[in-house]
Image (cartoon, rainbow, N blue to C red; front, side):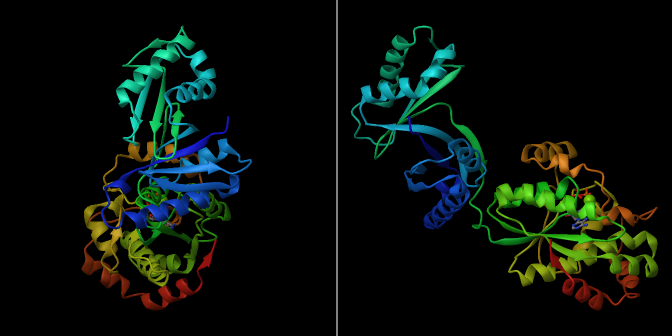
Length: 385
Ligand code: ATP
Ligand code: MG
């Protein structure tokens, strides 16, 4: 039996006048995401997006891909039938028969988006439930904890029958939140931060600082792998790789060791800001987390960003480590993040970093460097990974 994919919009439905814009973006994102799996007719009606296969499509793979599209709250594979109570029963028996056969209890839930349908949703649920019970006598009706829910939706063009809906990615459609540049290390936190912002509709441009030979080709590869994993949700990500060795050596040579981390981080901010502005980005994103390390005290965070004017967004700032790890596992980045390749920040870690750096001291220490020239040199040498 040919089925279709029903995708229920999330927060978009709360939008006012600009809702259409969000919806159009969502539809084009779904089209792009499903393209590798066959030809689909995709359209939207009554807060639901329909993806109907036209010819042979890889439905399992398409369904999994559609689950990762931001802006969709729940998703189900469904079968369409006539808006007639007995056609609905026949569709449920044929489409969900195997699952009803093996379940022990069930419940029918009906929604009537087309108010012209002659039965109320409760009447329809009772009718369908009664006849399904006759067809599968072993099935116990259970309103509280049914093993399977049979969903019936009466919509404009047809009736639809489906099993339980799956949770989808949530959030807002990619591209509706503008563009931002994200500092990505090989760690656990920054990929999670990127995912969170992309989920709010932000198109992300990842930037990685690479200190070859202090950090290895494998460390860079790990970041590219993380970007590829994130690409499942965020659209293809091209990492801007910034050669950082010269700057780190200059800092190590000419600045007090206790301030080297904070000065390093300020260089990351300046360089990222330039790349961000060049790419039309409105903010920077980091995986910084309050109190996690010396450079993430309130004082250090303040000094870190006092050399740039773009806002720095830190979506995981208030998470516990466990919350970040759980999120990383969920999105599939964790196993790659824990591979033991060094990051440029750790290679040059001072023995006693200042946890409460003062801006005046930092500015004074930076006077030993030709900051503008170093920044320009690094930006000019940046390449796409
Ligand atoms: P993560 O797990 O994301 O690496 P972390 O806890 O290791 O974070 P730091 O290494 O202090 O923390 O880095 C804080 C943030 O600075 C990172 O989340 C990331 O946004 C940015 N960052 C650190 N190192 C790099 C790098 N080599 N390239 C780009 N960004 C970096
Ligand atoms: Mg790190």
